[in-house]
Length: 405
Image (cartoon, rainbow, N blue to C red; front, top):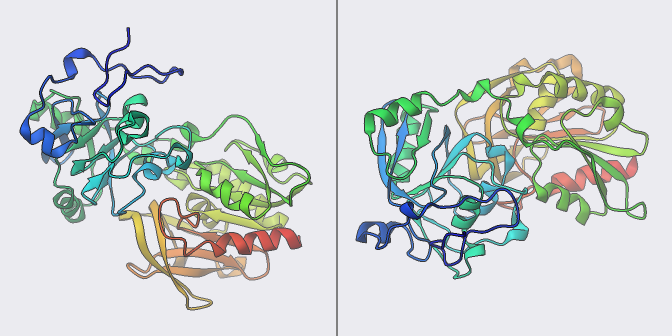
């Protein structure tokens, strides 16, 4: 029997990913404090804790799925785009802390989802708000239907300062009503380390997908390490056909004769674990046809070119990172989500690659270009979902190279 949901409808779904909320988790009358933190149109699930591995504990109110979820905490400073963040595979394995205080305030447009489901392990907000009555367009519905916990009532800016002082930390959102603080800390300490997990294998598809027809423009092969839908849309708007391949694709499959250019997509996790994709990138570099690496794809190309990668102390997460192009002097505001940087000083000079863009906040490498081949990489997300549209020219340059190939 379907259980009436606090959003306004029952929780039945046609797919197998449904999460039924037990009747016991649905309070008959939310407390005044809960009503101030979670819009009554969403409905809270009662008190909950956010626990960090260093012993810090934050009290809040649950509003996602009535389960626990843990991972590395990352702070996102975007003022919009919570829907795109939640459905971006790059956030797999992470608990996302949104510093903007009103999350859910404009609802959700399903067409703007960046993948078929959310991949983050949990969502932390100050206030869970609602702008629409339709429960299917609520962020809470997306989280509940896919088993993702969320907690409101957290001073997310204080939490961001705590992480800024202590570096990356693992944490867990406990299920509603689990309020034993000592046990909460132990559960946070037991969360697996980010470096030890293969997130790409979790998010990458198992089959090849073709988008477009033979009457469209040149064919681009995208290797999906955690692909966002807006990358495909950006290429399709420019007249390209797209072939999406799994992360296990061989060089022969990726570099087929009908392929005019290759994109190595963004994705989650540590590139040092990805020996196969790095070997593929070496083959693509040797092949010489247009190659674009985005975020994780940028790091993979950097490793293939002989550079080293290193984890950042805090990572870059948000839509306000200034990046300077060293060739043109142009400064762009970019959207980013990554934990690792390519170490510029380790890039071999004999390989033809050079650092092309840098982050103006910390000087980290934001792009590579090859001196002779049509190869470019960017550490940021040029597809702008969420985020600014400053960097869309990345796709223009790549498409021009594919068309000329």
